[in-house]
Image 1 (tube, rainbow, N blue to C red):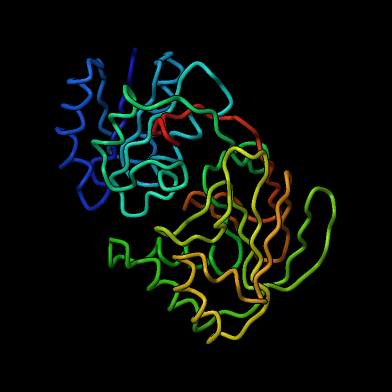
Image 2 (cartoon, one colour):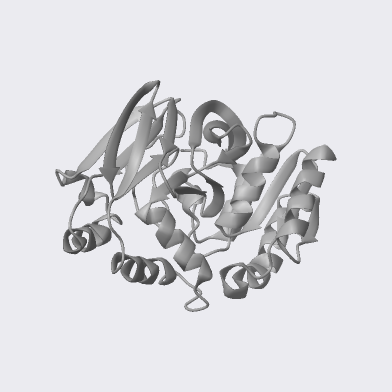
Length: 294
């Protein structure tokens, strides 16, 4: 088995670099010969992940946060020559959560290459050229993601909720055109989230019932509410209880389009594109190592 491990050593405030010797040791103990590549920046990480697939590695392993997972997904999606292994070392690790991997144990995640199973899972494909493993955010959540990315402090898991509180002070409902499997409607909403897996923002279960093997995308709409009510709903997103509120609408579709003035989409925590956004579920688009019981 030819394994290429691409690492963002700065992920998790340096946790990736700190844990790398243990991860490499686990792979060695499992008899897996691994080429380890340390990326210095985002562009180099893109080149390394794509190079591993183009070079016909059997497995591309990515170690870091959700940004590295996103690069791994986009390098391996839509082909069956190279499988993906996810080794979490960031602060959010939402794709690992959604696929049943241990989100804060990189050594256990690395052990799945030898001791887990290879599973085909769905992906979302945006505008035909970007692949998303977790959630595509539009509206309030996208603006929070943008604000969080610009914040120099804090670096850990508190950044997203702090950004949410800051954005809440100035936010008002947005106008959307939402199309589900060809059926369009116009509405105002706080946000529309389109999920292949359940969570974003470090464990916020915005699409709590999402299943990355059902051939459908879960769509969560939060209709207009007061700022105080949205503030009360935000903590409930970590448990998924917010869906009980009558302002929350849940549905599913194989194809979703989101349009509206000034809207942008964030997927896997990364800026994807300005609206219009067309998101299609691509069943079984990715081969990834998961626990044997998943």
